[in-house]
Length: 425
Image (cartoon, rainbow, N blue to C red; front, side, top):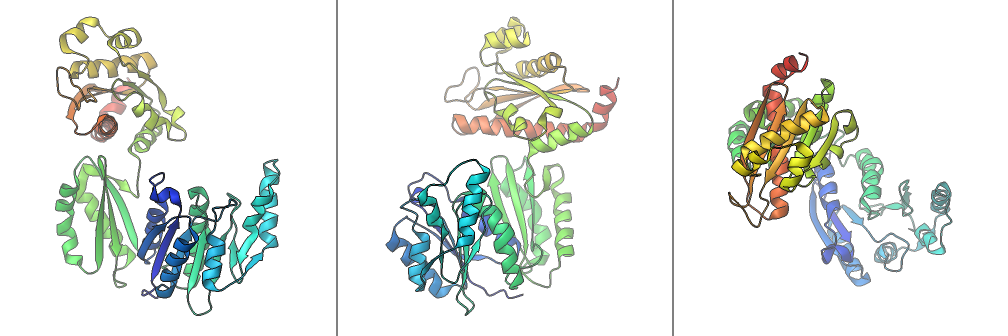
């Protein structure tokens, strides 16, 4: 395995520079390469302008072993990547009949007729190998100069670039010995504790492996992704897995799972395995909580439904909450959250229920903006929890949903046996 290869990535597109779209390709490609022991040394974004594309590519080509380029391979007049890079390489453009056949077949399967400009995408750099694109019409291109340098051109849409990179680019790099055959990284996710506390818990475990294993933290709202990377060949995959298991033990309940697990999916999977059901009632989150569950394929086997009861009148009419409860304790209260969870469980005939009510801001009420109460109904009891979140309206709503998911996740872990006993009575 050769570890000294220099890799640079260039993302082409005006939309990246004016804020219309974020550069998700950098995250994806950087992650995939790093998992296989190859790291990007440089990355940049350039506009759809010939001079900018030529300059960026020529500079990267002069110093890198592998130059990856995304975008600008489409059929329109501003898609200039192929022509400009061919010129920078001193190569001609050739019409590829195989690509033409793929384009015709792509449109035929959809009962459509390709327009003339679609066949612009049949133009390939002379000497390059086209990378077939079953998800679109723009092929990728793999070009080697014969002296150890490689340029790879990739289409811009993620649903085209990602599978092409995984299925065609990585296997070619593997055959050259530029990437490891197996992952040199291991990733896991924690939930419910902050990044500093995660680091405080894990650093003593990692200190003995300094110089052998590199750790990286990535904080999301309510979750922390941790990546362990074996940077020394002597550190074997089995050792990396053992280290990760030790990290899991230290994190305890905060350990969510390996990879990037979705807490909503974990909840649904646990309930489905036990033949149990779930319902939601929401106020300030406006349906975001139920949306997190219905984003999961197969959710209907567990998720009965959700109610958005924003005004007090809706809480009374849809959930039969007594007006005296709302008057005495307020809609944003532990009592209201618990009552909402119980009521929606009864109404939907669900085993479990989650509720959220709060002040998303910018104004508060009896309590300050950002105050949220979570209600939880299970076969063995009813709970509520108070949270206070910083941020604007959208941030408070998102944090409330994640807090509700984590609250239910922890309750399921702690009360699995009592829940099962009560549910069969």
